Figure (cartoon, rainbow, N blue to C red):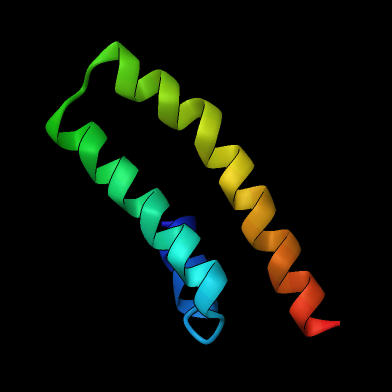
Length: 62
């Protein structure tokens, strides 16, 4: 749910919303393929992508 809120906030920032849509795509892949590989990939990549997206968002705001 937090990602959905972030995605709405970042809709105006194309780079950030692109990263968030990639995250939501990975999360939907988990729901269809709950394999250990996909779960590990998302657990490693989602925090990194969220951190990058938030960094870009803060840079654009400030």
